[in-house]
Image (cartoon, rainbow, N blue to C red; front, side):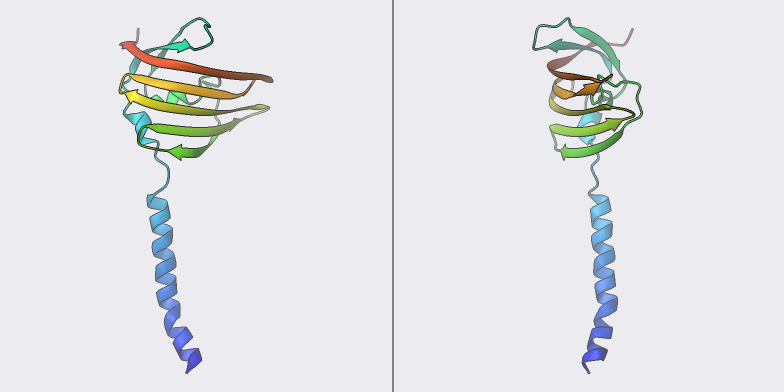
Length: 135
């Protein structure tokens, strides 16, 4: 009797496991907050007084790797909130970073990043503000 009861529960356990897997896949990090940042010309004002930087942003995801802009890097999403994301990434060689972006509006965000680029450490905090269309 006990064996038949266990055998009868197996299909239920399999369905529950499948449902949990589908639920986890549906909850995979989307970084949707970054998609709500407006494309265009953005100015980065660094808190340490460094020169401002102008960048053309096609989508907010480009703000993740400001010190590794053209690198193909693997990413791990640490936080995926409605108004803030944190992403840790690793590139080829000794190049990696961790960036937090907090959205204030569609055209204003706060960026904090640190890591290693070209074998040297970096760390910055900046205000990113959309200034117009890309030139």
